[in-house]
Every structure is written in C-alpha cells, then in structure tokens.
Amino acid sequence: MPRRFLRIFLRDEDGAVTIDWVVLTAAIMGLSLAIIALLWDSLTTNVGFLNNTIETRTISTTFPVAGDGD
View: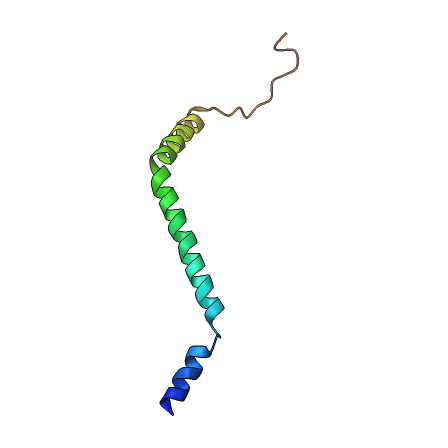
C-alpha cells in the first residue's frame, strides 16, 4: 500500500509549475544582484555627480520683466 502512494506521488505533476516559477524568480533575483554588485562603483560615482550638479543649481522664482534685457 505505501508503494502505491509513493508511485502516485512521484507521478503527480501538480505544483511543478510553482516550482518552475520559484526557480525562475530566484535566478532573476540572483542575476539582478550580480549585475548591481558589478556596477556598484560606477553607479555611486554617477549618482554622486548628479547629486552635486542638482545641489549647485539655482532656481529662479521670478520672471524677467519685459524690456529689462534690452
């Protein structure tokens, strides 16, 4: 009797799609983390440059009066 249940269990394909999705999602996450680790130095350099550029900009809150520049 237990062999019959084991045979039925091994032939049952329910849940196989779930396992496929879990493996696929884990692979995508692992690849994403590897890419981030590989590009981390250049990302932080570019973000720092962008931060400095934004901080040094001034925003004018007034409009120029017509005729002032002529």
